[in-house]
Image 1 (cartoon, rainbow, N blue to C red):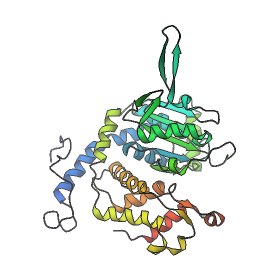
Image 2 (cartoon, rainbow, N blue to C red):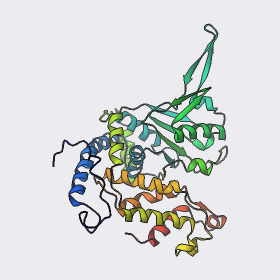
Image 3 (spheres, one colour):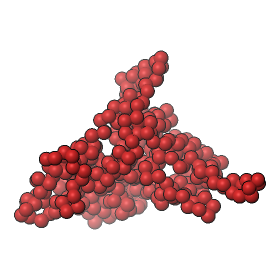
Image 4 (cartoon, helix red, strand yellow):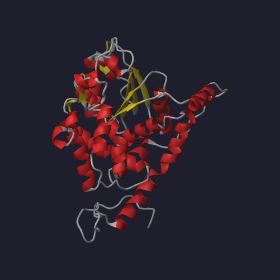
Length: 356
């Protein structure tokens, strides 16, 4: 096959589930080989990017992968973890490696929407207003301790995340195509926080939990960060490469059986009793919204892309499902009393649901 191809032509449609030419399993084998080759070609920058990130980051492979998935799937990611686990370092290193603008916003109770998006400044000499854009106008945004800001600031961030635009005065400004918000929440300190509304949490494609490094990893962190010179990150990817990769991710094939599997998982979060999981009826107050089904497919495509495949497998769905579903399942007081989290519920649903 010619490796100089840019993308399978529109006439080379995705394999369908029709029998005959596409085979009994719904795949056209020659097309799948072509698609795999194309995906592997487009994902060729991933090892170099990970190499630069790992110059600075120690461990946290799952976290790095989740941030890459959000970046490739054009979504946003919410991180929950104690301070000092390199969340800021990761997004800053990623920005350096892809030659992107980086902005860190520390959310505090006295933060105003204008501090986030910008404001109009009056010039008495010219008798005119000029627009000063805020820190949200960057490629990669770290919204640190996002639940410490009041609701009006959270709403301003929500508009930027969901609508990809910001309104300052009477003018609306479009965000850059390469726009990713990585928000962090501290699970320990609860005083002075404003709980994120479910509607806003639902806008995050993924919610990942950040754990402590193990002993060997922490020793390496200690040695690396107390050395004579910190590692230097070299730009190896451009924003244009990321945007081209996003287009390639959309080409990853999703079989009808995989779509049915995703629907089975999501519907069981809403109606567990009608789907063989009556024990979850008293534990789930609200199930996942349709946005969960959409984001499961998008994130699974990005997961397959990272692993050099042109098609989604059930393993992709199972790997990414906890991060897509955990913040979309609202548990009952009974679940909290029994110390049952949404993670337990997601694992129960994954274990019960038949895999295609």
